[in-house]
Image 1: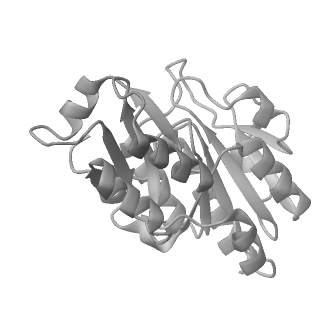
Image 2: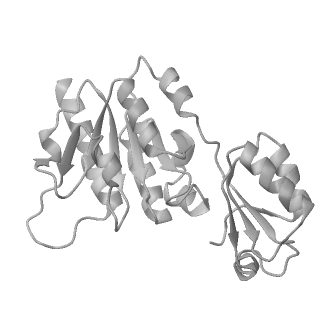
Length: 250
C-alpha cells in the first residue's frame, strides 16, 4: 500500500472534498469515531460526490500513515482524473474506440499491465468498478509505464449498467471465459467497436455480465494447467484484434 497518495486529518479531507478538481478513490474512517460533526460533514460531502467511504479499524489507518495525527480519517486520492462514460461515448461516437472492462481485478500489477497492453493495442478506454477490485493507485500507474495517462479510465458503481449503455451505443460485448465454446480468434474484431470484459483473478466474470455478452471466447491451451494470468489473457485477445485490423488493410 505504500506510495499511494493520501490526505489525512478531518480539516484536510474536508477541504479536498470541497475542491471539485480533486479525484478520490475512497475514504477510510475509523470505526472508533462517533458523534463527530466533521466526520459527518465528510460523509455528507462524500455522498454528494458519489465517493465511496468505509469504516475500518483504527489499526488499519495507523498502518497506512504511521506516526501521524490522522484523526480517524484518511482519503485515498486518485493520481488520475476519471472519465465519465457518457462523455467518452459522445467523444468517440464516430471513431474506432474499443474499451476494456475490468470486472473486479484485485491485483494492482495485473490492472497496470492490462492498461499498458490496452494502450498499445489501440484501446481508448477502460472501465473499473467503484467498489469491487483495485482502483488506480501508484502501483497501477507504475506498472502501466505511464499508460494510465494515455487512456480514458472510467470508474462506475454498476458494470451492468455500463455494458447495457455500451450495447445501446452499438458496441459488441466480448467476454473472456475459459468455459466458452468459441476461441478468441474465431471472432471478427474488424470494423466494430467492442467492449472486452476480463474477469477477476479467482472469481472470473460475474454471471450478470456474462449474460449480457454478445460473444464468449476462450484461449485454447495444450495442457490442463490453470488458466492464464488475466493480464496475459487480455494482451493475447487484444492483439488478435490488432492482427485482424492490420490484415484487413492489406
